[in-house]
Length: 133
Image: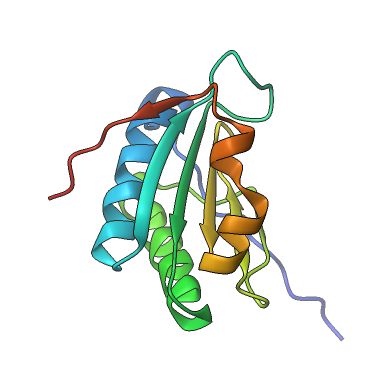
């Protein structure tokens, strides 16, 4: 039996990639288009080595959380040629975490967002104002 060959998608060169701020702003708009609630963007540069930005939002139920996650993945691949390094929590849909390197996307259920309180944990981060279209 012949093993299937896996071909990794081509990533844009670093010079052509969006920076973390632009990528985060794009994600905020995608999440807003999918009716995510309480969307915030935190600038945590200098506070952490894990990322420069967090985008945090809430979906009202597991289907919406998955829909937001799916749309972010589809649109970032289409618009910015970006794929997540990892995606966690999709099947449970209480807290989906998408790792885009310098940017982490957190999509919470209302209950999980209150429980984990990332805004409280990272309160020294700068809340970046983003106008929604």
